Length: 450
View 1 (tube, rainbow, N blue to C red):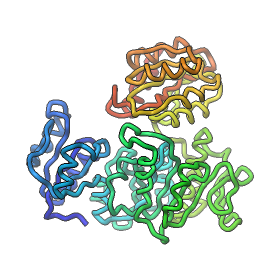
View 2 (cartoon, helix red, strand yellow):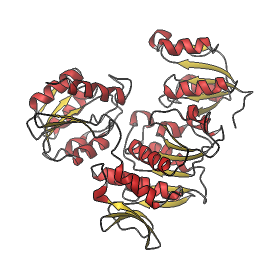
View 3 (cartoon, rainbow, N blue to C red):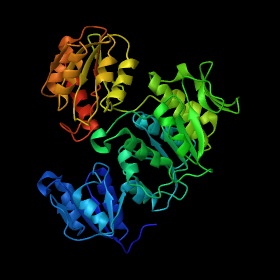
View 4 (cartoon, one colour):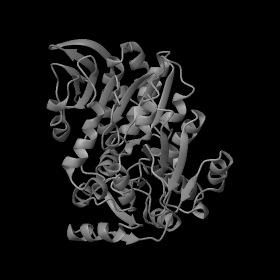
């Protein structure tokens, strides 16, 4: 439970930080906020709101006083020197997700993984809502958990997309159903090693017991190495193998099996409206999660048949002169972009590049397999990706300074039947505030083409 007598510092004034600050203020807690940006660099409406509420603000500077609890936004590394000093002095350091959990309302479903989180979370949210449950789709998908908890009923369900950053600063967070969709190297600039990254992901089931359920990708070796650490009931899913226990594909149909017998049937794989093998995995995971939460197979099947995906993930924008334009701005790491390339038939003009998270691009370039006809690069990683491409013999590429120039060059290079694909394989923070803003810019430029 939240200690209303404690003093709180919220660090990072993005969506999560702002949500946490609003909740703590409403609860009457002693509160201050901090951001590495100066007041002039932050939105004027945000700074005005904090000042009007009488909240002490440390913008562009570190606080001079000590706090009992420090609430971190996901983008803030807990290794910052002033945070380490605070921890050594006795401050508890938690995240906004943990803060929401401590408000002791509702039931949580927690979905993590390197890729597929948003699609699976939104799909599960639609299934839970279709089942008549009070459903809040929250977390890394774009809506602060704490902001929703205040108005939620006691039997509400929080279908939560959780990142490694959010999980890394949890203590008691305890979902009823957890899921790890896959694990490939990501955020190495922050976690440094794959083992550290996996350890952060494993915190999703740390507090679970035998009465809970954990859904794991049986096709992903890195994910399955975490299974022995989990005390919850395991429900694996696989698109490649007929499982004795778990969610899988049987004669072209998505099913759930227990002890070698099929106990629930959902829909045929060819009835799904979201393309690609990765989306079949997302659908299997969503079915397993929802069934574990007690939702009938018929409700799950109905939503699986009608769900058409999420914005910025393999999102069709338009067709012009026989050329398709697809927005996959959510492709923020090489593995996500590999899946996008694999899902598209025919020639691809690829727009890539962005913020450098320390990723390797060798497998990304290796996945082109003659499908990528030309690559347009922009952002901080442009030279790094070009060097790897040329090392592997792919030279049909050019550089661009921004999205306007990238789209123009892609359109000029494309022929009828081709697909212009924005799937950057990188985060957006070098040029944009978030991947959504990058996707919106791409769509605006595409829609302006004549």
